[in-house]
Amino acid sequence: MSTFSYVVTARSGAQPEQLFALLSDAPGWPRWAKPAITSGSWVTEGDPPPGGVGAVRKLGRWPKFGIEEVVASEPPRHHAYRIVRGQPVRAYRADVLLTPDDGGTLVTWSATFEPKYPGTGSLLVGFYKWLIGGFARRLAAYAEQS
Image 1: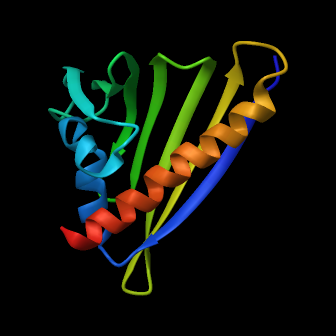
Image 2 (image 1 turned 135 degrees about the vertical axis):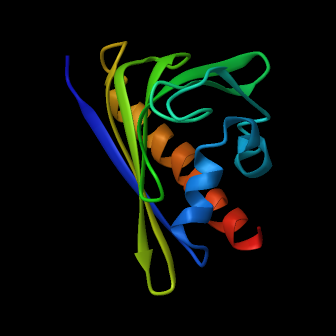
């Protein structure tokens, strides 16, 4: 199976700590990730609670939800997760890097994955760049207003 990847970026006038706090708060995702995310909750808490390594979150909108596990939580610079279920992919891992940049933060959101269905990889790359790029921009803008 082929591996695909994408990278999206956004800039925020907010500090990395503000962005990291928003990323690591599953119930708070609907505040900034609408319209795709209207519901967010913890399935299990991680170490440290609630959103540390091992935490499992449920994000989406009825009736479609994704289940993600936090695999790296290094405040305030690195948040990473893997998709457990809810997307047509295998081995999906995303890393969000928050880098201080000219008084604000550069958000770099990247991922690698294997498509479940042959021939869909390029289509999924385009979809994820659009979806996750929107998340990165909304996160950056919301953090500036918070």
